[in-house]
Image (cartoon, rainbow, N blue to C red; front, side, top):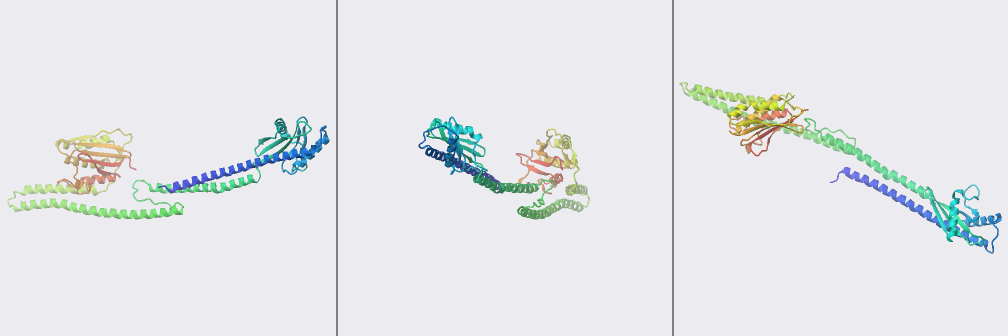
Length: 484
């Protein structure tokens, strides 16, 4: 489905294309108008040349020729003046191949007085077109395009007692001036102010809205440390977008409130489960101590006192371990971050449990990893406690002949600490609540070891997970490589 931004962009492209197309059509229309004006001008000078020829024929009727003198030239000028008087903008005259111009007239000239001199700039063109008409024996024309006008010169042969006589006419067809040109300019100005102005306005709207939408997207994509709730969005200044911003802010506040309520409910539920588990874990040792004490008191000779006291001491130790683990899990101590050499850290961690692994017939090894230019930062004491719990848990669940591998990896900006064993794995019924307190798959376990590991990982802004594996159990602690 196309976005609003793409639709506005398509509309902007359509405006630009329509503006270019309309401008092109207007220009072509003007060109056609200019061409039509040229055609009319060519027809005008041709007709004027025919009128000149008719007047000349009338003038020479009954004349058998003679000398070319000033009187004859004046009479011929009158003939040209009469022939061209009704043709606006057309000048012309009578030409003789030997004498040159015999007569010239421009009766519609709009200057201060009558124009009697041949146009010097066009003299060569006039001579050329008359020579062509005389040579071919029929009318000839020459067109000379200019920047704003087209010069059209026409010549036609005249039957005369004089040799080499032709008539010629000349006019200028203006292509860049006049009403048509002014209309074109007005149309283009209106076009630029409407279509291209609308396109520029739409482009600005598209640019501004894109910037405001990117501002909202950037705010919503906030990845700052600890940023869980939706961020508080600032007003953009656009009423439509501000209504969306207000709705998002209101939704974020409701989500934050519901999240806090859900977290509180989850804490209460976890507290209830932990209280039930704690009561169960304390009740069992107390019941055992009570039973042993009652048995010892039932025998008057005191033969069972020593055994009862030993059992009671063992149960007291069990309670002590339980309370110590419980305090370790519930005390929220801030980690003391420091750069840690992974090789030395894991070697020390593995070496601590080497004897216990050998006693159980389990192979305990530390994996290999590449050298990193930048050391990871975490609390080595707390992370040592977490790794100890994972390794002890693996040793307790791995039979003799099995193997446990401790590894460290870097994935993007995260540190992965992994403990993998070849034991029977985790039972399906406890997987979902594996990291909750007092959830254990062993009869002698307290169920606090993995809960302690999770709390330590969370204090480091990370977490722990059970990784799917073909055999055994693989636990992976993921924390930031360099916490901010």
